[in-house]
Length: 132
View 1 (cartoon, rainbow, N blue to C red):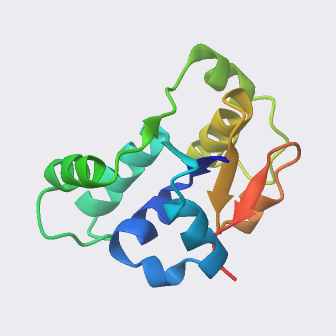
View 2 (cartoon, rainbow, N blue to C red):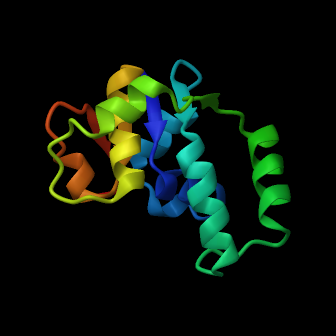
View 3 (cartoon, one colour):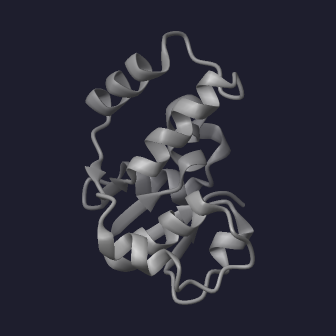
């Protein structure tokens, strides 16, 4: 399976894996699965660290670089196609980060792993529920 991690799922996997459903945690550790990350999630985590909404033991950039060395993820590049596709989505809200994540899942043919009900209900996007 090819899984795109929503920002909070990535953060939980790093800092609080107990928040993930057992099936999700298993999918994230299964070597047969490909784990993907959008640069939007890297940016979001940096912002959360700067605002102290996520607390880590080192500067944000250093934390993220180290996390990606320990648990490397494939880069779901932000492309023109993703940018165009994000405006076509019929989402119930206009959060730009969520739009980019959903469009990335569509463009790269990935399953979006999320706990966000608004994304889990996104029309046409394959999703996996991150917690029970």
